[in-house]
Image 1: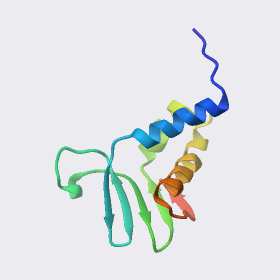
Image 2: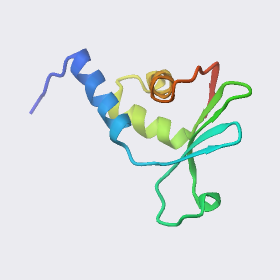
Image 3: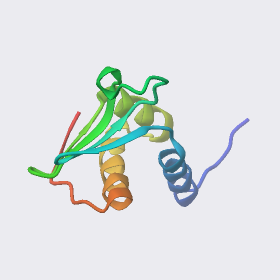
Image 4: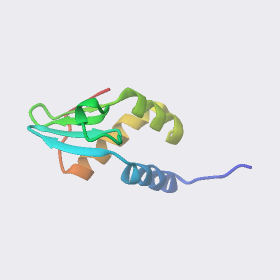
Length: 101
């Protein structure tokens, strides 16, 4: 069965995924850190999903997250990273100068 999804609807689906995904949040020193959900309370043992540095305005995004999100929601996987960057800026009210993954 084929389903036709408009660009606006696809954007809504992409945003819904990011807005409802589970993560652990930490605001430490000059960093905003999103960790993959973990049952343990020890963040040092959790893997980092995204990390924002207030000093150099850098956003690190785990490459596996970018790849999985891109393959699932984008015809061109390269479009995932800018989309996540824009979402992060809106969600946390910061400005991202560059992205690493």
